[in-house]
Image (cartoon, rainbow, N blue to C red):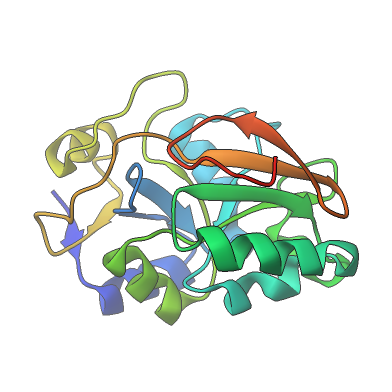
Length: 192
């Protein structure tokens, strides 16, 4: 098992490699936005499936949100973050490096995890996905994840804080005040 601290994780991320870290839902594999291809390679993930951009706080992600959706973004963020909610929202033109979707949207989330927030506060936003090989149910234990990704560094210390083991709720912004549910999860969004 390849355990690292935040300082070593930051060096690894800057070199273009991913890191595995805990969140409040499922363990995540993440990379700096300019290295998004690496997640697709390690997970064997279909490149048509976008990644989620995680931040440590809403203001860290606001520049990724298109002007037309900023008010709704701030409203939902203030009510449900940090937490198990992902917002799919139109992306700002100036933040194209974070785009992994073909429709100019970006999925944004602030995990309710001290370890994840601490890492992302240091690194800046990270493009993420659940830490599993695509098409297979992943492990939620550090030991199981280490078997699936033997060459990927894992953020310590362990044991990790408790997570739900369930994927986040995903909502999609259609237009001002109009959200749609894409995936049900732990969070029930009253605005739907």
